[in-house]
Amino acid sequence: MAIKYWVGAKAFVYNTKLKKLLVMQRAYGDTSAGMWENPGGKKEIGEDIRDTLKREILEETGIIVEDYRMLYATAINEEKSPFMIIGFFVATDKEEIEMSIEHVKYRWVDVEDYLSLVDRGIKKDFKDAKIEEIIKEYE
Image (cartoon, rainbow, N blue to C red; front, top):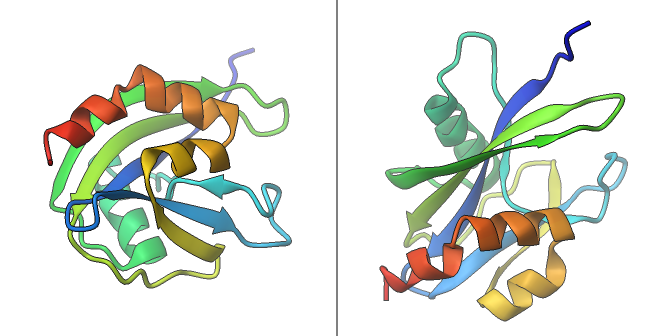
């Protein structure tokens, strides 16, 4: 029997003015409550993954995505809800975030602080996608 995955878009969001990355803390009552993560979410049926990225980032942060690049795909094989994440890099100069109810906090942080907050899966994606090298293009 084939495994059915849901598909989503997540983004490393970099502020070109502040020279910092965005990290958001999941709301309580969620399966990942309290976890620090990148904004993003599930693809809707018939939706292009780039449109998913733009919709989810706008819904969760108020950022209109214009400068982005697709980086990687990774599968998370959770037994109850396996999913495929398409990772993006988004650059913005917007500083104020308009959070949805999905998150309780956000921070703009440097790379070191970012890596101290996120879980090992996000750290691996960060390293594999060479996010530090991409950031240097904006300095």
